[in-house]
Image 1 (tube, rainbow over the protein chains, first blue to last red):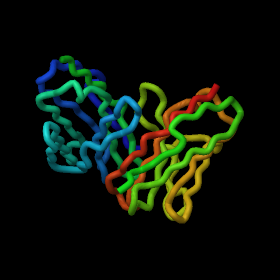
Image 2 (image 1 turned 135 degrees about the vertical axis):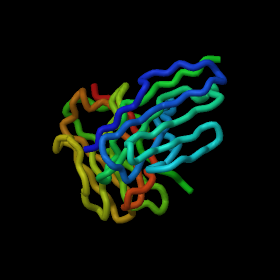
Image 3 (image 1 turned 120 degrees about the vertical axis):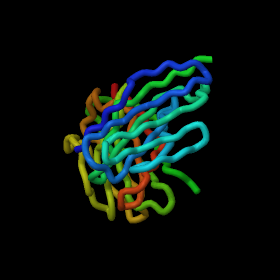
Image 4 (image 1 turned 60 degrees about the vertical axis):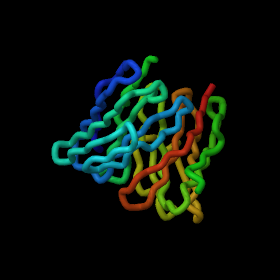
Length: 107
Length: 112
């Protein structure tokens, strides 16, 4: 199956700072998603982005499929952005997840 | 529009017992996938059901089995529970072709 690597594993930010999370994947993909896992465990959909660029408020994402990576940008971070961010890729009907990036935003 | 719903939310079982977890997909979705997430790790794919058949399976033993019903809802069964089966079990639904997947809130299983 496809291998997914996320970096950095941990990120500590001051409120208001910007940050970039990276996701590398080992093969071509049919689907690439970014999720935020809330403290109760639910995976919240952030972006469905097998290629191109999308923006949603303070968050944006870019996937460069030919170079097999995706980036998640968080701008003007808030304490509510804290949590674990997962990238997941699919090329054979199943999502393969990275190990996640744990983001801590300090007031 | 109801999203993906799972039941129960929490469960405590004893080693050797059997457990059944349930999932109702998002309205309009026909494909259900199950994932296991151990503490501190990313979710791992267990299997996927489409048209009431298992279409894909991850690296899980036969103790893990499933079923999909004509209304697209699904069950995950785990037999002969081990302590290592303690985890968050997540259900995802999507359309059959590679499209955006949506997850339920999960069932947290503790095996004692």
